Amino acid sequence: MSRPENAQPGRTLTPRGAATRARIVAAAADLMYVKGVNATTLDDVRAASNTSKSQLYNHFPDKEELVRAVVAARAAQILERERGSLQRLKSFRGLVRWRDALVQRNALQNGAYGCALGSMASELADQDDQARSMLAEAFVEWEGLLAAGLQRMRDSGVLRSDADPEKLATGLMAALQGGYLLAETAHDIKPMEIALDMALDHVKSFLTA
Image (cartoon, rainbow, N blue to C red; front, side, top):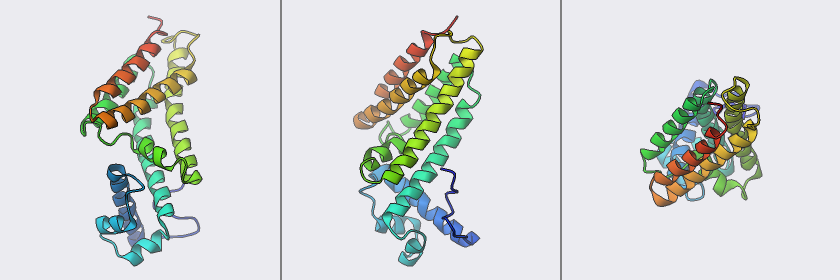
């Protein structure tokens, strides 16, 4: 997860090469989010990124390498966003704001495409173990941000001492990803709202006041 999205091991790119690679990854990420990983072809990516075959294959010798680059880019993007929301989390109101931001963002498309990471995980878990491991690491970090915030809430007395931040974080993540999936299937944001609200109600049951 620490590798820059515009670099490859043992290879230094020129600014122009880095820009081309970034354009390819961005186009592939958009296509794979809407169409799915398996339904997106290299020809689709080449056309969307306005690159030649030689440019595409110079950066990505096969689709597997491109998919892994997309996973890394998406993970970096989402984790940067979530750090901004969760690194200072210390109140239940902060959790509600986190929930509202995620729901509002997904509502822009009526929940149609789900979580960018979760959607890839459902396709890649049994196909590419390296990509699966990258996705697993991203989810661990995301859940860890929630757990750290809940731990701060417990340490400051907002949550009771018997609250388990790690278990509560797992419950919130499970509700979030399940909510994304149900909203995607229904093209309706309501299931996501319900799943997250029920998980938040469970956290609320541990509030001290």
